[in-house]
Length: 151
Image (cartoon, rainbow, N blue to C red; front, side):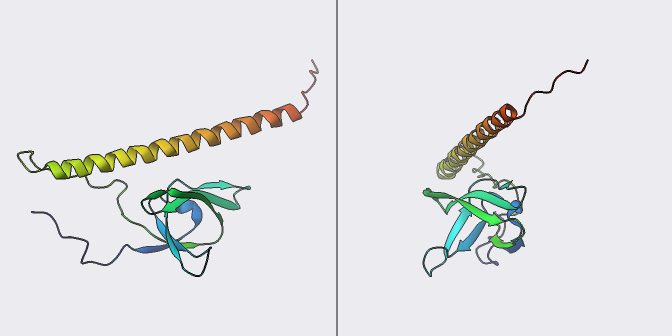
């Protein structure tokens, strides 16, 4: 028998956190366009820039990667988010003892495939950022004159 369901309990807890404390999967409401607030989901880890004064993260509408965009926050301003789960990983499907619960295995396979796609996108994002930083470092090195040897 399975444990108690969360459906009858309280909704996800809301947290007031700084943007650099965001986790992938956190959700928040944003009313930037129009009067109606829309729910957004954090799709990448937050990155600080401008000497730590700003934070950016990739966000998307829940379950809709086509709406992905970069979101920027001032690092000192708290935001209210709903943390979907307290554990870092989702629970895995537990098949019946005889292994015939094919539908739960298929759901778990779909979930894992989606998670792999998300990780691949995050890896590509990190590789792009790494390439940008490497290029910026090389440009900075070119601007600095070489020191003359005194020995």
